[in-house]
Image (cartoon, rainbow, N blue to C red):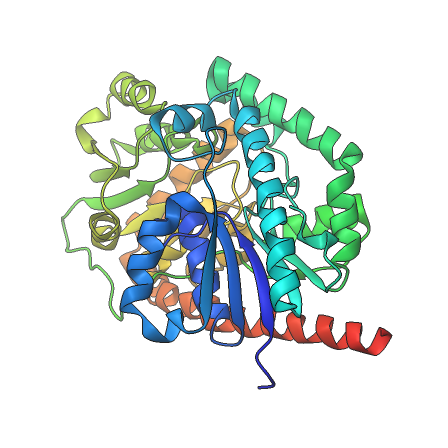
Length: 426
């Protein structure tokens, strides 16, 4: 396997008890520590959860050392105020706060490098391309990724997001394009990371080639949960089909696409929809379900603990994703791990994960076409239980292709090539 490298990692989002990007960061750190000794710089508000986890996992605590950037008033933390900023048009303020944190992280990184003489640096999380951090400035090989954030939300779908949603995502598309053209830090970081650039999806890979003329390797940014089943939920004859949907209640998650699809088939089949998560759009979406006369079949669970949320997904027969702005989404692999077939738009990271073996991908052409095709896909699985069970079995096979172990092996190869190239050029 070769000697263990000393790797400096910037992982602002890294928490053993959280989902989304925090859970992703923790998953990467655990997996990569099987191969290398990691020195991880992260946010101080993760300290308690990380240290509690390390106290219970001796092998991990002997391979990873965490360093916490001292928290300052202007640094982001998951408080009510910052969470409001994160989900509003004020999000650029959060981005600026993160950049300030990255400056502090770089000061710490330089001191650590002077002391430990790292073999390599890795910018891990956040994954957004506009946040390369500063580790690329160190005089050692630099790996960046999985990188995300380069793809815009389809313009033709923006009107369905409502006034605030339209302004937010139109503004994001505009700023995204400007930043791809004018931001100098990503350009310099991509050049430094040449040979060690990891794209989260095939779509991101295309964007990196288009805007930065760099080659990269595609490695899905997320991994499966620990709880992978060996069986799936069976729909008994005559019972309503149970669907599940999970995510933050934000315009880009586009739950109304599913609500309208279900309203079109409500006279054709009995169904129940479990809606997980919460957010600014919850009340608006509940009112839409009532207007569509489907509210009696919708169960709004709110933000459940992770174990309870997985149980709801596990008990469902079909998992539906409607997000129009995402990379891959943790809930996608969670659904596959529970043996639940997935219906999703054929874009973002979903295109790379879902195959005809484990789900149904719906083309993304227009809002009307998308909710119509979602309805057709749902009816197809409802009316063909043999096919649905076949896809459920396929889901349990497909999830094995996204193991943390495989991801770590791929990144280990990148690490070793970068270090070897550096030694060869020196």
